[in-house]
Image (cartoon, rainbow, N blue to C red; front, top):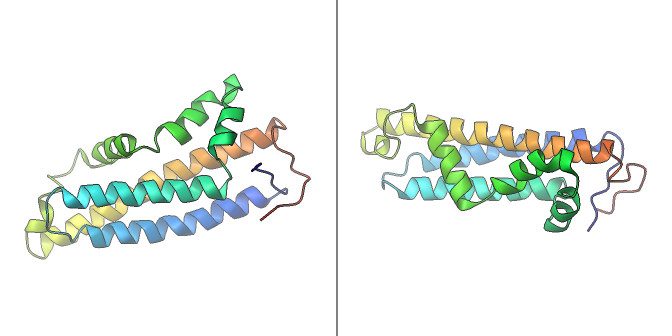
Length: 159
């Protein structure tokens, strides 16, 4: 499947993904109430991986597109950012980095009410921040591909 966009369609796709970030972050906040240490982190990783998959699908950044795009040296950093981070280990690392300056996130849900509220807020913020960053990388990769005429911006959208 080729990733072909009308002019202005990239911004529409970015806006749809931005709305999805809030939904995924809200799911992460609910998961922050999970009192089982370690399980909530695994669920957050799953939430982020699903979000990343949705964004790549929205911009048609498939494995086939990755192969085509990585042949352009100028795009390699963005290709690595989009496809390299979207792994279980990559997401777990990013979440740890986002939460490293906070109290032990996995133990917060064990503290009644206040700890659970803080954990929920941290889960929301971490997924939102990761989502914003990943969305920007997907958007920039698609935009650069369009700018370099790797994709045809005049063709009709097939979806």
